[in-house]
Image (cartoon, rainbow, N blue to C red; front, side, top):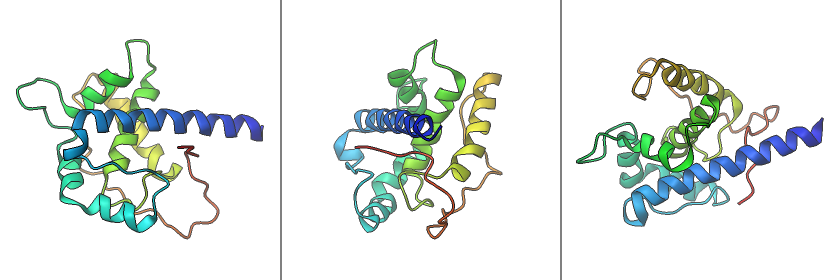
Length: 157
């Protein structure tokens, strides 16, 4: 069972890496400076607080100029297809949302952060709604001292 869980986390980590690469591809280096999940905590915090990352985070669900497509929809276009399950699409959205979110100190989020957002975005996709952040859903900072909770995604970059 432990090996199955480890394999599942590795697959999620690989998927998350794919979604982040799509973000870098869409926004290019000048708009979204490169960062790795293995970078020092202070480097990540500075990166997330930067004006470039804050701007991209704010625009993630907005339309691309001169297009009907939003940035998050473009990520889905680059990483998913018609056969991609809804939960996987929702995971892509949550990965991008949490990756850029300046309120979250890490790039890799814990399950308690991911699960509620997965449900929100799965519902939006099922209903055919345009993707958007829930106004009533505030993402709290992760508790760094929470020893009991493992990272939801075990990345290997």
